[in-house]
Length: 211
Image 1 (cartoon, one colour):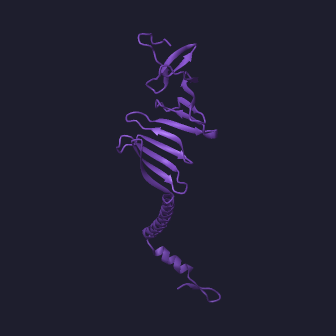
Image 2 (tube, one colour):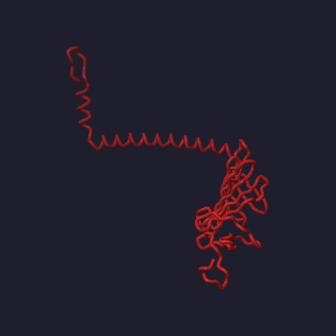
Image 3 (cartoon, rainbow, N blue to C red):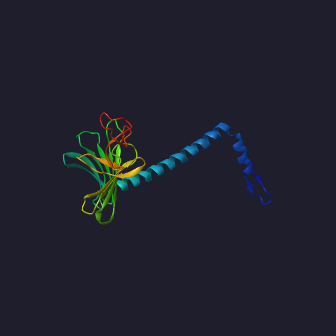
């Protein structure tokens, strides 16, 4: 029993302390571990519940549909509320491996990734200007940086075409269905080097340092 004070009330503190001292240390440690395990389980369950709730909410806002256009198959993710596309995966070879992926913002195609087997992917970024004009930055060579930019006017007609060569943008001068640039008054045919960067094509039989 506990001790009594001057008013006759019993204090169980000493009794409780004796009981605790009588419990083996390993039992106390096990009890603490069990409490921590229960607390962690409760926290994990709470987190998973709300993560699934957010996932269910997100799934209700989109729809995935199969599409086919211009002999190309694809999977399209659509925003149900607006009816506009968010993301499209294209399969031109009718297999399971995607050839390209389109990303959309407010229903407009803003980023395009070309996937090539055994090569680095190439990219296109589309910037929509005033009255439906579009500027397109591309990485056709797969260099990992934008090396080409195209400007389309409000009628969708190409109005300017530049390439990144020799640390500067150069206007493209197409001749005989070939892409080239003019340097010091002379026209030079362009091609990609092994790193996917634009370089001047050396004429057959000419010295390698000739422009």
